[in-house]
Amino acid sequence: MKKVLIAAMAATLMVPAAVMADDTYNTKCVACHATGAAGAPKLGDAAAWAPRAELGMDALLASVKNGKGAMPPKGLCMDCTDDQFKGAIQFMLDNSK
Image (tube, rainbow, N blue to C red; front, side, top):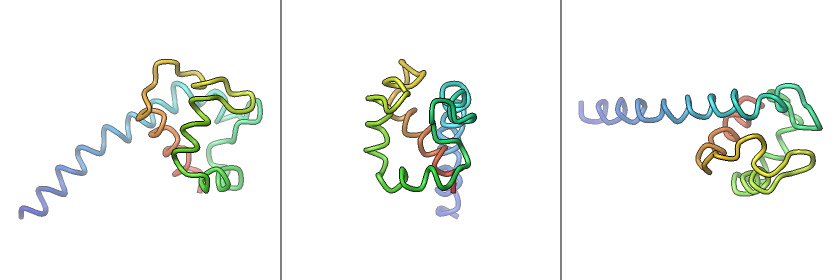
């Protein structure tokens, strides 16, 4: 019973992070990553995201924070935290396999 309760609590705590990642993507990243604007890798494009995924989260986070190609530093989210960026990155990776 104790293990079930712990698992249920952990799952409950993870939901806000997933919702936050989805919200960050849908409000800050979607403009370019849904359309491929300015060469942004599109959500769902496994071929475009695979080599990026191999770089690892730290490298992808650095790309977001510093800017890459036509994407300015921090994209369209000047007030996002590292955790919000990581969540949005993970959301795009998870939905592009």
